[in-house]
Image 1 (cartoon, helix red, strand yellow):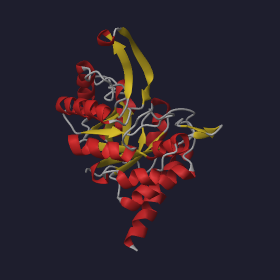
Image 2 (cartoon, helix red, strand yellow):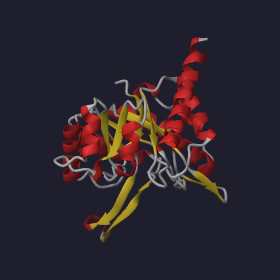
Image 3 (cartoon, helix red, strand yellow):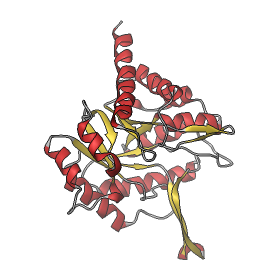
Image 4 (tube, rainbow, N blue to C red):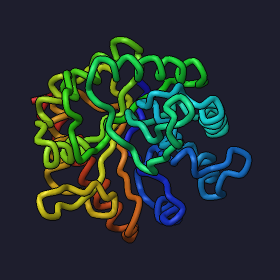
Length: 280
């Protein structure tokens, strides 16, 4: 796997701060928010400085019953090529349903919805992933999502589901440790058990993000500081492997550059401590 280092999600609202942050090796940009022929000047400046930029898609809906939309795949491929990206990423989720084949209106969720962890759903996901891989010019990595519910009749744990997905398709994984923590609070799932079952040799990189708990529900807000429990999940992952890259996400209530730098330093401390413990 390509070594990415420590990165941050690029957003226009914090473009100036990101340009001044020390030690940022790479950034990730929401693919649907950029136009290949008209990249933001601040993003172009980062690329000219040698900063790797990876497009992160949010709308393919690879977990849905429909096959991936060719237009969306073409658009994602164009962004990967425009950015000179080493890979592209998306989510293990569905975002739309319905349509002519179901005799019901087409519905767009506007959100990443969890795929049932059943063998039938896995079959559909694997075929959709293969179609996407064939259409993209660079490798694809898929992210585990945060969710509020479990579907009834699930047959596999999250770790088992992801492991079989990787075995059958060769897709890489983008593991979001904040989402593992979210699923621990909201769904009662053990992050350690998930990490034990994951094929970490397929790891492309890691997401870290903040959230907040209200009335016993964890909200994966990306608008709050990263909490200690999320860093603990990152540490547990680093006990098992050295991640090729770790990225801080922030999507709202943007702080000053100093706070972002502090969160990146906290991530680096976890990585450094894990390396020290393995060497001891």
